[in-house]
Length: 156
Image (cartoon, rainbow, N blue to C red; front, side, top):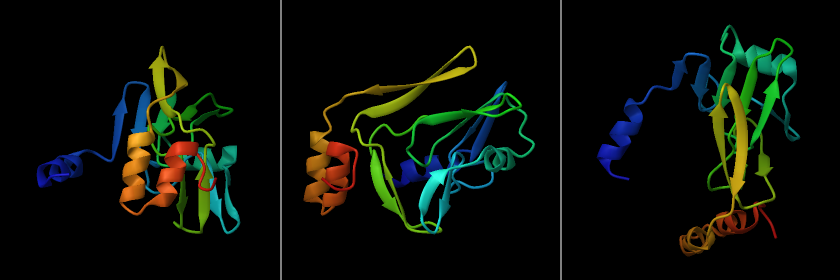
């Protein structure tokens, strides 16, 4: 990436609110906090409804779109608010050590994306030629990413 690309990315807002929609990377509190998952010493688990509601805080939008974990899923809270994660277009598995060591594995190399129509979010998966990216990862010394790109897992 060029310096101009980095500057443009740095200029973007961390969150964006549109009518009926809140957009965040992690949560509105932090880019590295997970919205729909909770990291613990033993790994990562689905967040409880209470944890998700706490992370939403006083955000009163019907739909919140998040990312960060690369895990495509959505949760509807008892009050009707929905939080949806589109997943990842590229990397379907990775290891991380933020807070505690944990692993994400979607088990499928297909790209994920999300479409919102009439206030409802739908996750889609599509196959793509992931081999060029996997080969480049291997050449660059990231054999773990090469496996993840090919399989959606961290090990074969």
